[in-house]
Amino acid sequence: MDPVMSGLEGVVVAETRLSDVRGDAGRLVIAGADVETLAGRVPLEDVAAMMMPRLDFGRGRARAWNELALAPVKNGMNALRAAVARLEADDAEAIVGAVAVFAAAWSRGIRGLEPLAPDPSLGHAADYLRMLTGQAREPLVRAMDAYLVTVIDHGMNASTFTARVIASTGSDLVSAVTGAIGALKGPLHGGAPGPVLEMLDAIGAPERAEAWIRTELAAGRRIMGMGHRIYRVRDPRAAVLEREVERLEGIGSGDGSTRIRAKLALARATESAAERVLAERHKERVLRANVEFYTAVLLDAIGIPREAFSPTFAVSRVCGWCAHVLEQRKTGRLIRPLSRYVGPVPGANLGND
Ligand code: COA
Image (cartoon, rainbow, N blue to C red):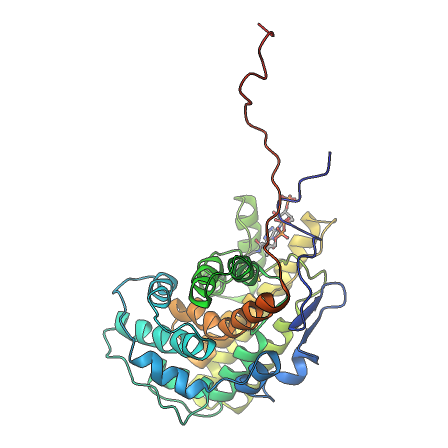
């Protein structure tokens, strides 16, 4: 009998030109370029244009503003899932614009603030930051753009696979993206950065990191932001995001810079303690920092409220989802794997008693 691959590990389900995750080498190639050469250097709009026909992001945001109708719910991914699901427009421009406009408006709403209308003349990163926090100034805009580029696509991750499965049935883009948002919400995928920040808060000081981690593991809990299905070395995106935090620390001034420096020192101490303790416990498996670890530190340094971390991930990843849906439509086939039935079969026990 064939083994059941319940996590589909090692199973290749599509050919893609969009991104390549090299788990052993710690390398991420996005549409022909290494992530390190794109983040902080090439704006999100141009990276998206390497993956699918160029979108007018500003027009997409303006169109979304006319369809803004958010349910007053506490969880940002629930708000996003519901708002995207109701979209009438079914093209990538509208959906990519909508995720940014809706995520920012939701976050302001739960803080008791009025939503801010998009400014189509700004870049996507700058306008998202402005709609969310009320201002968009350098160097924060660059840091946000670098973050969005870093997480735009990542092989056959769970939310992208979800989008492709839905697209493979011939369904529409809105349905594929709505499903993908649901997949991204989970803590094993895109829901980890909020908990990473909570962990750093709970640890409080670098010298307490190791004891805290040992207690968590002894209680049977996982360390958020550590481990990855594909990477057997440190996630290359962690290094890109760490570099951006360092940059903010270096050019920031006064209290802001001191706060970032302290958070970065705490994050580094926590990462190395977690790596050490996990290596002791899992000799068979390398468990190192993943993208979510430094996402938490960077988004916090930019001033993004932590409940908006996962929605901010979606602001970028929606580009990848749309590109994958377009690719799936062109080259894909109905995705329909098998299951092994282990339940009772009528009549199977006849004659045994
Ligand atoms: N903390 C503690 N233990 C961990 C761990 C973590 N972050 N990640 C994996 N492990 C352990 C598992 O408990 C398992 O141990 P066991 O065999 O004794 O049960 C072993 O390592 C293998 O884990 P497995 O669940 O097979 O790995 P996976 O490939 O399915 O999981 C993740 C990958 C990302 C889901 C997993 O590493 C994880 O849960 N990380 C924390 C959440 C997170 O950061 N998510 C964001 C991902 S980008």
